[in-house]
Amino acid sequence: MYDVVIVGAGITGSFITRELSKYNLKIAMIDKSNDVANGTTKANSAIVHAGYDAEEGSLKAKFNVRGNKLYEAICKELHVPFKRIGSLVLAFDDQDIVTIRELYDRGLKNGVEEMMLLEKDEVLRLEENINNDVVGALHAKSAGIVGPWELAIALTENALENGAELHLNCHVKGISKNAKGFELDTTKGLMETKMVVNCAGVHSDDINNMVNENKIEIIPNSGEYNLFDKSMGSFVNSVIFRCPTQAGKGVLVTPTVHGNLLVGPTALNVEDKDGVATTYEGLTFINNLSKETMKEMKFQNVITSFTGIRAKVAGGDFIVGESEESPGFFNVAGIDSPGLTAAPAIAEYVVGQIISTRDRTEIKKDFIHNRRPSIHFMDLSSHEKDALISKDPAFGKIICRCENITEGEIIDIIRREAGATTLDGVKRRARPGSGRCQGGFCASRVIEIFAREQNILITEVVKDNLQSVILTGKTNEAGR
Image (cartoon, rainbow, N blue to C red; front, side, top):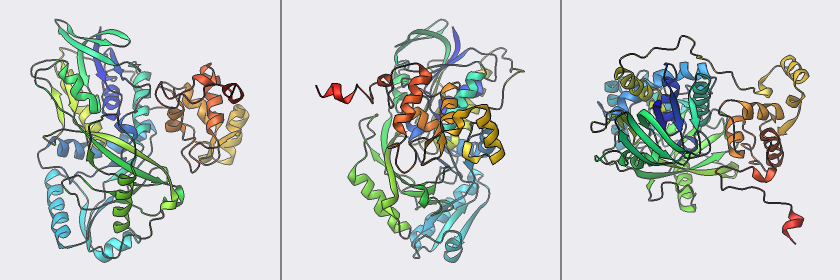
């Protein structure tokens, strides 16, 4: 019998699991995928928003502003890349000026600090590559960028170090209420728990609707992106937004924490919750809009494109809290933008609700706050590199030339708590295959290392999900 089962190992699920692991509770996080952060968390804008967008009094406004303030300390504890670089909402005409003034006023009401309205010359001094027809901007200094999947992985790793359990490839087929709490029928068997936290992203309506008559409907919303090579990483210094529309915050241009440039997304309601194909129309749309925003976008430097699916609801606001008809069942649903920013504040709130329902729950005296940092060999001094290689020669072998990733780094992230279980899992944790060649040169070596470390055949290594087989056999045998 678990005290709490968290359904969904994305950014909100991993934040809640880590927060719950501070207490003497038996907890488990489960996910239908075979890795942490395998849904919306791995395919989004990676922006920590300031908080001026959301309507005053909404959960989005409340959790955004609070979450933004929590980010720096959490990322420092877990050794996750985070940079507070500020954002600009650009105005190109008189109507846009009206909009950014409205956003400024809303930000003040929401409690956003360090905002200012800029004139044209002030904008161009900050960002010389913005088109000259800009007439002004809203500058929010508290906005930032983060590594979203790295954060979810780090949170999970830290939670497991503190006693939480992780069950992957664990699909929930049904949930029933009983006198003790809930029974989850999963592909890994039955799980009994006193409480359930529904963080299932685009499938959170499916989970809620197994339990409650008060139904939720998730509207899947597709967003396509282009990622540029590091040669474009310094093209902008801030997160660059156009004025928002009914469709969302619009196409943005932003540096990433790893030195790339990201452009996107589109915003299109779709039927397929798991449909992450990119389209010519979508990528053309974001490219054209980014050219209206910026000077000389060099699209020959795009190294990959991807699509994420966001979970929207008709009401527009987050659905967070305990179900009135099913005490002990907590929904964290409809978490679209600014969900990444809001996640630590949502976790703080939900865990507070959970703890308040119990007669007595003690905080662990031996809670481990800090996660052991990942090793980034190329960031070390010459002396540190020599010492590390003498201790482990694997750190002297470069596997990924684009990102300068060593064999030692790959081995480290496979052997950790919540370590990589797929080729893409290795890429998200240590970045081999994230450079210009996108794994064209290093993937075969990573597969060999992964198979050796997991003691499996190279034909058993998968790219992402269990069906994404990479190798099926030797080519000379296949041709017979």
